[in-house]
Each structure stands twice: as structure tokens, then as C-alpha cells.
Length: 588
Image 1 (cartoon, one colour):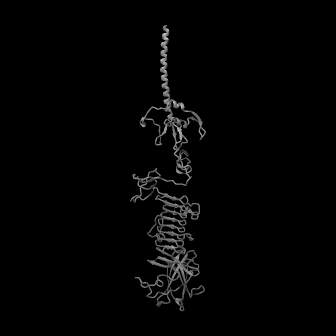
Image 2: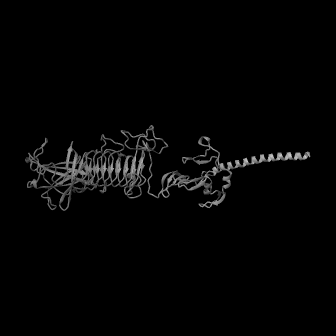
Image 3: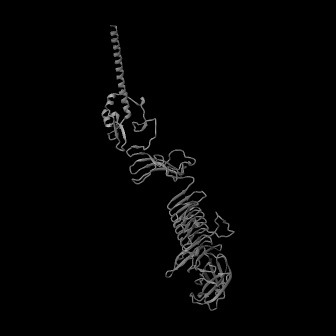
């Protein structure tokens, strides 16, 4: 591949093959070449000059010159007759050089570097048969070129396959790789980049092209801008970036896709862009993976690019050099941009809800979502809704026990907290890792704490109430009840006035907070009757059943009342006897 620049700053490449004429016309030659302009087959009018030299060296003088003005070139194909060679010239010893200029220019022709020697036609018997050969040796029998020119295969006289070698002088000329460009003649490896693979596709941009515009993308060739890039097919796709920074980029197909970052990939779709280094667009339409190591797919999914890429190629950049790196963005069919907002994030837009489902028996169809986010471990047996509930954010379904486990290191808190966006007011449940208690939050404060030993702490109580609470035999909080239907073996209480008289009323201060109080000492009450106290799990005396003392007080009052009745009867009897004595004394 040979490069040179014209006055209009267009790059022309000439792939040249010189064939000797039949023996009867030994002094007449046909000059054939494939001319490229700007990486594509040349189309237009050019002035050509061919000089014949006695050798390949720069100091060899031209023996003859052929001028061809205003030559119409179509699809890059050049076919010229070179007649009237010098009578003393040996055609097999001539080297030919090509110079080119635009037909409407008055400047000198620009020489194409390098010269080509005449190739002797293959004699009959060494040609490849159109029905196949036998006994060929691939080391000596092959189709191709033996110099540094490209190999072109045509169909309908238009380029359909091009193989372009890349040669370096390190320190001697070495063919290091070749670019293979199939499909439309509009497909090209721009500026001769090496190691390019274009599998096919492409379409010539022309007003009469029947392909037309597809989703705003006009027909065009597939173009590779960086070394070792790949485009499998489709049209108007491109891989790599001018300057070579998009090496190893790949486009699988589709239309109007561009893999511009190094090692980036666009699987297919329409109008997608993988601009970050090692970024991927999985498909869809008008999506962009702008950050390094990012992934995007769906409709208008956007991972913000870095400042070096620029906003115009995707969406507003992230403000740093590598964009929203490591982010995964998937967007549903909603026709609106869904743009990343930071690096190393997973962002999903799914207006119909998200279902994460384990394999359930032989089911192959996803379960209908009960809310927006759904995790289905097993079939709960409940009827499936026609559509997700508008108020259910998350639903977790199983065919047996179902738990949401919140795991965190020891000595740290974990829980479920409810809050308004941006509000400090919150409520919920928090398990504290320091003392292993469960806190119930409301309005940003702890309103109840269940200790690890089962103690319940209520820092605030209501102002008043008419219903007393008790703990039943099952250690459940219940209303206090004394109905006959809950009792057996009812007998009169043996405790009474004597027990009350034995109680020692005391005043004291609580050790915990120094609050002054009055009451009884539980250990002293226990000595009178166990039924009047409580014990803890260790069997230690814990408290006094003050409400039970009311029964003892009632018995004591009843005892005092009985005594009073007896004393009243005795007093009435004494009054009657006294009245009789006074009557007798009056009769005397």
C-alpha cells in the first residue's frame, strides 16, 4: 500500500499490476491499477503520468513517459495501453512509476513512491482451472500477489473483497499482517491502518440507493479507523478512532454503530456508541457506553463519557477523564434517555417491574410481578395479579418460610428504616450490635427497646388510661382479668388482718436513679406469703404483687367489720340490760 498527498490534501493509493502483451505485440503493454482516494475507491477525473525506467533506483533516468489527461476513473479501476516502447528497450527490464494529479489542477503530478516491474504472464498450464486443480503445492501454487500491492476480487466489475498487506522495514521488509475488507466497495481501512477485518455489508452512499434511510441513518460504507479493528457487517458502522486510540475495537453489525474506545465492542443494533476504553454496548438503539469498562444496552441507555470524549458523542460528560467507569446501564423501551449518575453502579429502567426468579418446578415463564421489585424463590400458591400493585415496592415470595436477612459485622447496627426523602424523621426497626437489643424507632427517636434478655423498655408512656395490663401464664401482655371462668378451686383467703399488721411499710430511694418512693420490701413480704411476690428466672425475689395485697386488705377489713358487728351487738345487749336495771330502780 503506497501513500502520497495531492494538492487538495487527499490521499491516493495505487495498487499496480503491469502485464506483458501477447508475443505478437511484444512492445505493447497494458497498465492496470486500482486507485484509492481517501481510503475509498477513486471516482472522478484525474491526470496520470507513467514513466518507464531502466531500474528501480532513484538515480535511474526515465527512458520514456506516457501522459494521460482527464482520465475518468470509476470505482478506482485504471486500464491504460502503453504503446511505442523504445526500440532498444527490453520490456522485461523496465520499471514503471506512477504520478497523479486532479484533472482540474495545474500543479505538477505527484509521484507515487516506489516502482513496479513488468510481470510476465503465466504460461498455459500454470493457470488455475475454473473447475478446480489437483496436485498443487501451496508453497508455489497460489492466487495472490508477490509484491507489496493489494489483492482485489471483483463482482459485477466492482470491488467485493480486498486484501491489503502491511509491510515494515524492521530492519528488512517484513509483511506483519494484512487487512481483509469484504462487502461494499465503500468499505475501507482508512489511511491504510493495518490488521483490519471487515466481513461484509456496507452500502454505497448514492441518491438512487434503494436501501434508503433507516432510523435516520443513511446508507454508507463500514470503515475501520484504527489497527486491528473488526466490523462484521451491517452498514455505516465504524470501529476505531483517527489517531489509532481505538485499537482492537469491534462492531458486530447493525447500522450507524461506532466502537471508538480501545478494546470496545458494539454487538449490534442501531446508532449505538461504545466510546470508553474496553466498554460494551450489548445492542438496542441509540445507547452509549461512554465510561471506561462500562456496559449499556436497550433504548437510549447512556453511560456518561469522560472529558476527553466530549458531550456531543453521547451525553453530558461526567467531569472526569474516564467517565462513569464500571457502570452498567440497561433501559427498557421507553423513548427517553436513561443516563448514569456515577461510576461503578448498576442502573436499570424497567417500567413494568423487575422479577428475579429461581427455577420453580417445570415453569419456564416468569411470574407476574406483585410489586416493582420481585424475588421469587418458590411458589406461594397465591393467585398472580394481572399487573403490579402501584404501592408495593418490593415483593418476596416463597413456598415455605421466607426471610430477608440483613447481615453485618459484629458491633454495628443493622435494620429496616423508613424515611421521607431528605428528611431526618425516620422510623423502623434497628438491631444494635453493641448490646444485641431491638429498637423500635418513630419520628427519629427510639420509642421502645427490647433487651437481649427479654426486658422491654418504654421510655415514654401515655398520660392516662383506664385499662390495666398484666402478664399471663404464657408470658404474654394481656388485660388484667378476674373472671370466674379463668379460675378453679376457689376458697376463702386465709390471709387477713394479721398479714396486714405484719407488713412493714417503708420509704426509700431507687438505686438506679435516686427517685424517692414508698412501698414494701419484697423479701419481707415473701416471708409472709409467696403468693404476694414475684421471682426472676434465677429464682430470686424480684417484686411485690401490690394488686394482690388488695385481697388481703379486703379480708382484713372484713375481719374488722365482723368484729365491729359483734361489738355493736354486744353493746346493744348491754344497753338493753342497763335499761332494765334503771327501770327497776325507778319502781322503788
